[in-house]
Length: 215
Image (cartoon, rainbow, N blue to C red; front, top):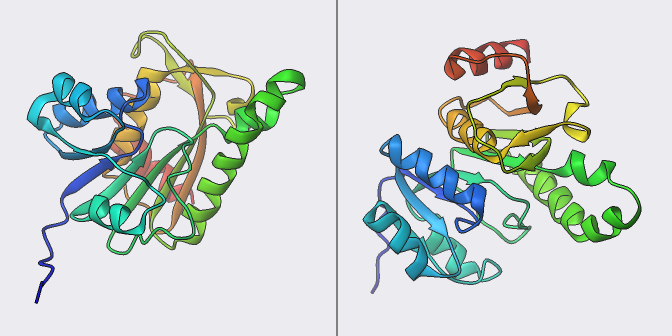
């Protein structure tokens, strides 16, 4: 008889670990000495990039047994792209915090040909947000502005409502916010918009505490 021994829940799962922003999230987590699991398609390239710092998970997220194995020992999930990781079938029992970087505001604001090209991504983003909100798990939903490839740490931020639909933010800065959000666990759900702007944030722990206090 096989007995599943519950392993300590101390890992952070990064979905879409091969994406540019996923790799930035992984790098930030390594610097924080976190135990990391990452969903990837090519195990070898990820292992070549990060060595033994990352436990690579390769499989079909639609397969219940695979997602169960993937989430074993996971305390928090960072979803840095709208990849449809969350679905009705996924069992998130035991996960203490979900951090979702959502581009929903960007997709909803696109028009013409761009809107047609983004329609599938928009549906995935809507689905991810719906499932996360309905999960009952403490969640941080970061509705980011359009992601661009530019150095992080050079600009401040803008958290004004509506900014995500029209602003831009560097992938590196967005990845930093995802990782900084990890230990700021809300009671239920924290949702905010962000783009690069003029507001300097030197202490994210204090920023998140103040944001959650506002409700």
